[in-house]
Image (cartoon, rainbow, N blue to C red; front, side, top):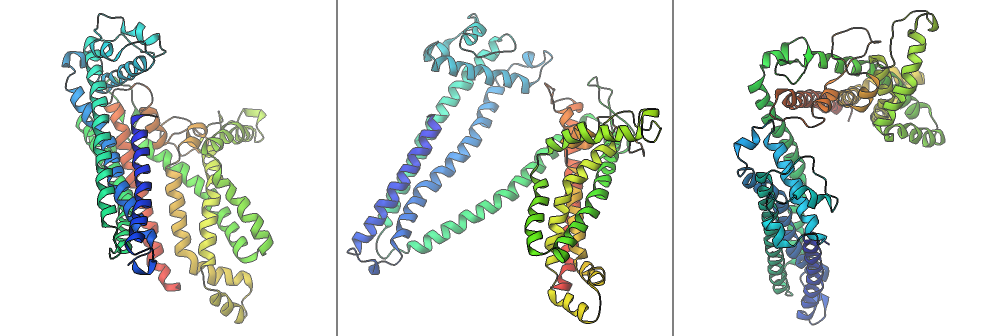
Length: 492
């Protein structure tokens, strides 16, 4: 068990002890009669456990997040500019520093080096051989500056962990003593616990918002760095995508945006009619037994990993389309419009299949939410079931269905694996659905794959692409929510 695990275990054990002691103390103060207590005995114990564990574990979480950043800032300042300028970057150097520091931890843990030897290890020692003897692989020779930084990194991390344990356990002990001392019969334990639970719920709700803000700002700052190195006019208004990592790249989002929208439109053309018709059948025509079987079977499609859909596109749908549209006389149509299995149509068809349960499930819930009185009124006036669906149910559910379609569109725009395996990797403008194209998401993966220099525009462009994609999908979601909330009230 590491020192962090030991700290968490100690805090939890102390909180359990606080629960027991506070509960017993409160009952003892009331002479063993619960009626003499302001709150139930459980609240006194919960109050003690909460005061013991929550502040301590909160500080522990913040410490674990902040310590690596503080250590990296301190250690990165030790790296001379001459080392960084040798065809490398500070990010790659820090990766080597962390790898060497981890290696020193391993050799000390396995007894190959003593603690003092690891601190005083010099560059003259064959560090790579020492680390290799215990199975720690390094991709390059260890420079003296990297070794010194790794030793500082390791020492700072160890010192930080010790201080973390001391501070967290001290907070837990203070909370334990304070909460147990408060556990008297007249203490309003229930009110305190309820306020504490409310605060925890508010923090949990805020975390989602703060996470979204953090994601946006992280992409925004890197996008700003990209636009300092590459003109924004070429990114938004250029006509080609040709990164080459030599400083003369064409990095326009327009070909990628065209491929993204083209594939998404084909996917929606497949998913929306099938999903909507399936929802109408399940909600209006299917009996309870059929619905109980058909709806779960349809929603199983939503649980299939997207990589499986990608393989299905590559191995089944793509070759089937080639047999129809390609290979000259061998094709069923006698033409050669499609030269390979990867094409916009391949990815669009498979992505549409993936979106069918998404559209059908949302549409089914929306159609079922239409009041039954509207159906009864239409049928009572002599309309047939099909006329009722067309003229009453669907118009009433249309805002929600439009919202479901827009949400499905945002899901299609963000898809990656199906496009990687089914659509190809060519960024271009073309109206032919039988040609290979690519999307924004696949280019983001490509630009960030491998040992890339994060100071180059060819890598930073991935953040600009991600920010643009985020704004696009956010806009679709906002429009969907606006439509649903604006028009749904007419039928409540």
